[in-house]
Amino acid sequence: MTRKLLALSLLFSAFLLGFNSSALASESEEDKTSFIMHHVVDSHEWHFATFGHTHVTLPLPVIVYSGDRGLEFFMSTDFQDHETHAFGKEFAHEGYFIDDHDHLGRVDGGSFTDFSITKNVVMMFIVIFVVAYVSLSAASHYKKNGPVAPKGAAAIIEPIVIFVRDEIAHKSIGPRYKKYVPYLITLFLFIWFGNLLGLLPGAANITGNIAVTLTLAVLTFIITNVSGNKDYWKHVFATPGVPIPMLLIIVPVEIIGLFTKPFALMVRLFVAITAGHIVILGFIALAFIFESISIGIVSTIMVTFINIIELLVATIQAYVFTLFTAMYIGGAVAEHAHDDHH
Image 1: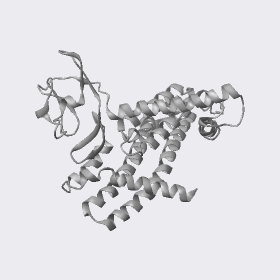
Image 2: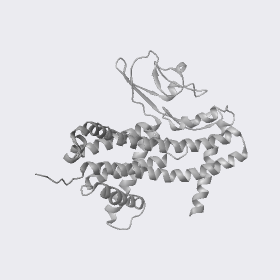
Image 3: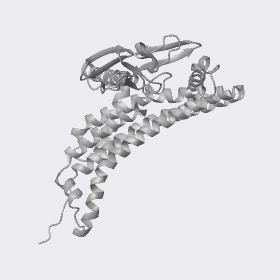
Image 4: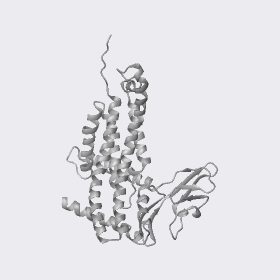
């Protein structure tokens, strides 16, 4: 099994190295590393590969709303030079343009709201579909067959559900854990599948997008603080056992702590996933920068092992985010026994 995994990883790494080879081989040294940032940031089109001057891309809808022009619909190809595939202000369409950093702008500088379906949004829909499909398939298996040995999707979902319920939710939250289990399972599956699918060549990296991790952290922040009981808020605004003068210092620290906890969740997931992708793509770029077979072999070996590590990181980060979320909720709903002194 280990040999098969290593062989598959080696083939996968070799494929990654060859994925952009036709485009990188004739580019300058700067251009040979530009694909790294292009991969980790969001885009108004989904670029899969480049073969010579041929770009394999999926055009995406550009949806714009402005007070003076209303709701408008375009495609990302409307803002490109069709020969060079380049974006820029010189290729403006209907008063809008996409710059070199893939940001949508308006020629006259007017204000607007961008509702475009970007690469990360499409990838998010794919992850949601995969999570829903696998989960519903597992549920359908038990609905038809009853409490039998899991097969297919159920064999994947059941261990995760049991682990999140018993080892994360129950142990971290306590007796009131059941109402939070659906959220924690959904959180784990969304992050886990997002991490795993983001490792595929050409795939979008949604958990390496700060907007996605921010949204997940905000959801945790809202659920934690809405669930907070009297003891939780008393600990924040009137910490028991602390002299009144010290509360002037402790209370601001506690209030700041309400925000730093979800902030840490957001940054940890974003940095861990983004860094892994940049390291892998950096080793791929080395083969084309040095244009050496020996460097290419070393890069392939390094990318193989980093890919194996990234599979582990994908699971660990889903576990860590879910665990800390459960711990924060557990701290908010915990009942504290107080001794009354008369």
